[in-house]
Length: 132
Image (cartoon, rainbow, N blue to C red; front, side, top):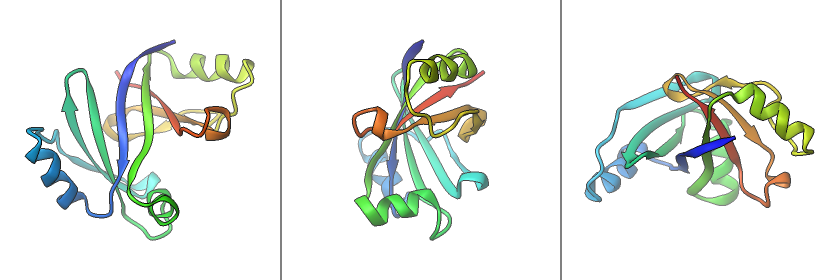
């Protein structure tokens, strides 16, 4: 079902400042994108076959702003690549995994994404990601 680690999502307060740090590490940004639906601005930094995704909230009531308020900046989720997200969600639901998203939604880079509930994943917010 899972193909690879697609990306690791890191919640940041200031995308520009955080991006400078990752550039200091020698990474190059693949660009930024605003995902209005999720109230977030993201920057992806490819690393080998995966990416680091920096997430800055575009709204004080957005999920990333709420995450930072509760937990501070840091790793917010890990995303795994799947070939067929609908099939993966159906299989996981059948196995008793609690889903946040029963159906995929739009993610950055045109991906179809869905989240699994941390109460079913030992406290880790897991994202499934299908990209063309």
